Image (spheres, rainbow, N blue to C red):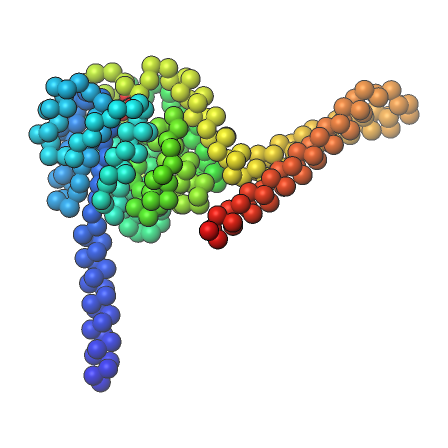
Length: 321
Ligand SMILES: Nc1nc2c(ncn2[C@@H]2O[C@H](COP(=O)(O)OP(=O)(O)O)[C@@H](O)[C@H]2O)c(=O)[nH]1
Ligand SMILES: [Mg+2]
């Protein structure tokens, strides 16, 4: 009887501890800024939504006057000396103490509730990294059709190459589990904004999730990220491909190999059909090209396979270290 009561007590104790741990999880929010008027209001809203156990870290690259004004927010302030929003966020995350880490643009365009939703998704154990998907709730004139289209292409590429399902890889809001971030904390960010974090975590096998958020029009000032969104997009695309090529060669080379072989075979079939129809063999050039395509495609596939085995061996050796 006593043993039974003791067991029950331990179970209850563990249950309560879990609830307390979940409630008490410390959250760190990193906010990159370049002269953003909206950040003051944003921090007030976030404090209210996330509670007292939240740490704010602003990584700023603005004028001295603006930096002085930031002191009133009570956030930890970091002055950025290098460039790029991904470097700013990385610097902030490296200083964070939370169990769950997040980042949000300072310009007031992203719905701060997304952080609350993202934290919940991570606590439910369904994801390690959560992106705020803006595309289902766009305020009028918040995102031009051209930007939206580019974003959709990049998000589809990301989903395909990294075997995930996300719709807004260029968002300015994410939440990440501390243990997942610790695995990439020493990486040097490349110019891909928040996609850098998405790529690095996805390729390590962390589960990427998304939550719907609202997206508002910018209330103050202009975009600080870059004036050349098109070249920025191309850059992100090139990183999406490059990182996969290094880590999953079978997907890239093997995939290309299969496509080339199929084209070669289709061409070969047309040669065969023409021979069967006319009874004479006149399409020598086409036959040669078809043959070459099949051989080249096959070589691509085999290269992908060999590279994949080498990468896997390297991964296992790294784990053994
Ligand atoms: N510290 C820092 N913040 C940046 C940098 N580039 C952009 N930001 C901030 O990152 C957020 C997103 O930039 P934004 O200009 O709104 O990009 P857009 O929404 O893509 O046009 C904003 O809070 C900017 O102030 C940078 O190089 N350093
Ligand atoms: Mg913005």
